[in-house]
Each structure stands twice: as structure tokens, then as C-alpha cells.
Image 1 (tube, rainbow, N blue to C red):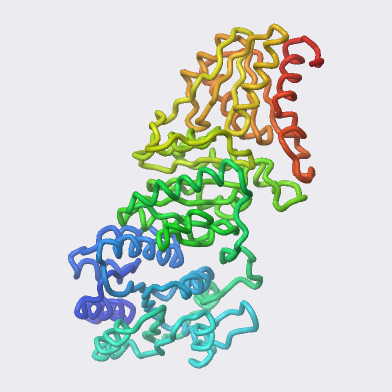
Image 2 (cartoon, rainbow, N blue to C red):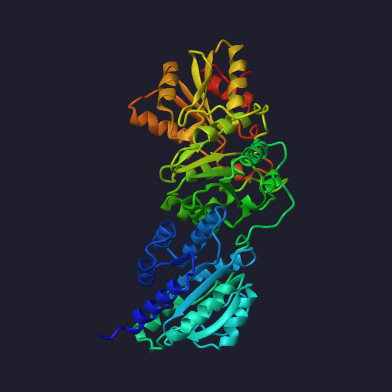
Length: 521
């Protein structure tokens, strides 16, 4: 029986990789299935990550996360990534992103007639089929990737020698195996662009995190929580932080190699691999850059991970500039992540309690932070876990219920004290969790017969929307008022809660008007 060139090349490589004891191998497709059968499925997590990846770039990132986790347990040797002739546009960027790391990665490109040997155009060019080997080498080495040459895959007797030599080297390197050089049909030629090793014509500025010494704004709740988190995670050897924010990681840098700078585009896949390898990933994301990974978030964060989202709400893009449009809509985007638990802590101690209480959740837990100042100090020692999905009542009163989230909780408390001077006894509730909403807490708030939600977010998709959706589901109809940021908040430089009417005074004025008492204070 004659074996087709495609199957023979893949089979020969799988057999040889097994013979040389290559170690961890990420390989999707029929060749990978053959290899994993030969090895007796030695690394089932890595096998699942490879098969479940949507692209070669995602496979590479998730495999790197898994290898990072396993190296902490003593795993040695390089990571081998085998690509079956289908290099997508994102793969070159993924290779470039890892070339600067102290990691040993061997990429084996099986080239079955497509011939990734072309001259590279200026800048972010394209590799097509009509180039010389020298130009491919120059292109790869410009990315910091060592080119191990192009070799005839139809001579499997040389495979073992080639692979042993490639495995013995260090750094990120690529071995190009030339399979059957069959001519492409017209139909294949028309589709061949999707297989070229290419980069987009314009390199996005956000591809690699900026190495900046500028820290997050001082004296904010986010900075206080991250500083305390650094101390807490220092005692947790299984925790790893992925830092995707342009500013310097500040206190988290004390974690050393467990604080990794990554770009938003690669971080989810790598964190997935780290989680499958037994680590607890913490992802520090900027609300401004959520749109860049929104499609990935919608596909689901199907692993335990903590997302710490900074720069939310009215956080200005820079001193004197208005907030980013995405920062004003971050809750709406985060609420759409499947199975997410989304919290907006009011202070440092609450953030620690929320983190402690959600530690065993099998999916994504997201904490959202704005430019709100740090209020109070966290208690020493381990935090007392806050029950997942449960809010808290801070003040009782029959006249009206004020429901705050995050930065608006303490303004609600101060507004209630102001209203008390006018004979209005307001209850104050800290929602804590926006997904899932605490229905028992909401039922308690309904005894006031009038609800006011207050949040540092635009009117659509945030905490107020979550409350209204829950009321509708529970078939409750009560007078309600949603105090949110105005639609023109993105046009206001250096805007604060006062400019949005969300300060204690602004809340008190709005509540008096809502109750038919006029606006005077």
C-alpha cells in the first residue's frame, strides 16, 4: 500500500521525535495525533491544549504557559512546536514576542509544497512561495529567531541527526522541513495566502508591552490592592502574574520571574496553559485595551483565572486628558464573559476578601478598579473570605435604597448621612458582585419600595442594567433611578465623580429630586 507524501512525512517526523525523546511537544492535526499515540500520551494537558487551540499562535502561547508551569516542578528540555504547513499571520508575531524571553523553543515547520522561502518586503512584509533560503533566514533572524536551515523531509534517515542537533541548541529556533514539492492547483493557489508566514502591513503599537518606569497613578485603590497582592502572592508559589499594562508593575516586580510582561493578544492563551500546568494565573489588564481581546473573552475563559482590570471608569488616559471610551464601558464588556464572576470592590480590604472568597471558583473572576482613591487600610494578616456572590448592607432606612458599586459605595454612605438631615432615612447597599447579582440583597433593598443605583459607568450594560434585568426576572416593578456617567463623559478632561454627579452631594441632590423634594441641599 502506498503512503501519501503528506502522511509519510508526518509519520516519519512523529516516529523520529519519539525516538530522540524530544520531551514536551505541541502538535495539532493528524501528525500530532500519531505522535501522541506513540508516546502513550505522556503529557495529556499539553495534548489537549494543542488540539483545542484555534490557531498555531494560540497553540504556541498556551504551550509556553504550560511549560512555564511545569518547569517550576522540574521539567527540563526544550519545548517543541510542530506546525503542519499552515502558518497564519499571527504566528510570526507570536515568535517575535517570545524571542526575547529566556526560553528554549524549537519550531518545526513542515513545508509540503508551499515553500516559505521568499524575500521579505520592507517593514511588515510577507513571505510567499518564490524566495531564497537566505531571505527566510534574514527574516527570522530579524525577529531574534535562529534559522536551522531547510532540509529535505523525503530523506527520513537524516531526521534523527537533524533533530538531535536542533534539540541540543538554545533559544528560539526554527527548523524548516521540505516535504513533497507538489505543484499547487489553481484552487490551492487562490487559497495559499492564508498559509504564508506573514505580518499585518501596519504593526500595532500595542503588540509588545511598553517598558515604562511610570507606575499606575499613586494613592488609588488599584495601586493599594496590587501592592498588598504582591505581598500575599509572595507566599503562594503557585501564583503567577501576567502584566499587560503599559506602566511598570510596581510592587508586583518583587515576584521576580513570577511577574511576566505580556501583550494582551497572547496573554489568555498562555494563562490557559499555565492553569493547565497547575498554576494560579492573575492577569492585570487595562480597561482601555479590553476591545483588543474582546472576541477572545467572548469565546470563554475556560480555566480558573483572576482578572484584575485597572483604568476603568473616569481614569484619564493621561494627566489632563479625558478617559478612554472603553474605560467607560468596561463593566458592559466584562459582564459578557461566559460564567464570569465580576466584582467591584469598594476598598482594599474588600478586594482582599473578595479574592480570598473566590479562590476555588473554577472559572474567571474579574475585579474592576477605577481611579478611585484608596480608602482606609487593609487589616493585617490573612483576609476573611467574603462569600462569593454576596453583597453587604452598610446602613438601614425605610425611605429609599442606595445601591453602590466600587467607587460609589462610600459616596452613597455620605449621601445617606446628608439625606438624614432632611428626614430621608436611606438604606445603603454595597453590591460587591455585579455578576452574579446578589438576589437576596436585592430583595432586602426592595422593602424600601424605591431603588437608586449609583455607578461609575455609562448607562448601558453596567450595574444598573444588571439590577433592572434582575428585577424583571423576579417580576418586581418598583420606582427606580440609575445614576450613571453622562454620555459625554469621554469628552471631559480630568473628569471626576463630581463632574458626573456621582459625588455624595450630587447623589443627595438626585435622590431628593427623585423623591419629589426638590434639589436644594
